[in-house]
Amino acid sequence: MSIFIALLVLSFLIFFHELGHFLMARFFGVKVDVFSIGFGKRLFTKKIGDTEWSISIIPLGGYVKMKGQDDGNPLDKNYDSDSYTTKKPWQKILILLAGPFANFFVAFILYFTASQMGTYLSPLFNYAHYIQPTIGAFSSDSPAKEAGLKEGDRIVKINGIEIKNWDSIGKSIQKYNRNIEFTILRDNRELKFNITPLIKEQKNKFGESIKRKIIGIAPKIGDNLLKFSPIDGIVFAYNETIYASTMIFKSVEKLITGSVPANQMGGVISIVDITSKASQSGLLALIFFTALISVNLGVLNLLPIPALDGGHIMFNLYEIITRKAPSEKIMYRLTIVGWGILLSLMLLGIYNDLNRLLG
View (cartoon, rainbow, N blue to C red):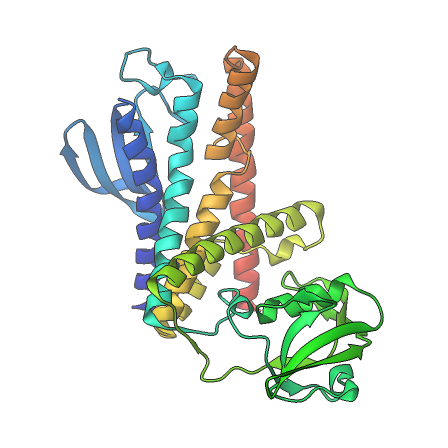
């Protein structure tokens, strides 16, 4: 059942991605021949208007085939008025952006939904941004405790800069060197303490070993439940969509530069496995992870790889800048290279997945 739910989640996200392309294409008068969830042999097909709506046998992707646009054969053009080929570059860019935008919008809605359900602290979102900067515990070698801070103290300023949430504390500490001035609120009185942080080697979110300044404090958690008004929920959803997008862009950058080894990259098996486990952990965990996958799909489709939305956007930007269409032969060759890159990445992801599953 959990694997079925995972495949359903993937199909749900792919549907909305392709629906974004479909709606924008229709807005600009482009005929859509096929709207398919999945690849390969079609299990179910129904023609509505000019479009064949299909569910195919391999539920690990999907596509919208527009008239005059075919990634399988980039040289296949059509110059009718309802063809993708005849549209202006800026219109094509909007059609291409609509898919990733739909994924970001779905993630936003999911994050907002989670905020209105009452959100437990989870590593699936940046929870430190939403909890008060109140000390709940100290480490054994805490410089903050040695300086005289106590449990229940609320940090209100660091070197005169206002602190609004727990996330701001760590970021502020990294900016300064020795003898950082902390202003804390205790029994409705403001007190000042000078603290010299320790420098320790730790793992960051990408698994890299980095040196960080720490003062040995942990937040006061309370009942672990964050509650948001509808307005605050909108802010939460916006912040988390931006935060997740930023983290995925950074992950891709670190994979490209080699800061994170290629064996850390997962594939579709990992996505299905983790989604199925999230579904077993409860509805809230599944919503958060689905939002994360949705952002992932949006970001990865914007990468400037031919055969992805981002690659086609680059071709159209080239046409806008140079005022001439790219060479069809070069586009064809680059698209073949793009498919090769995508296939290689998929195989690498599956190889890593199998290695992890088999130990």
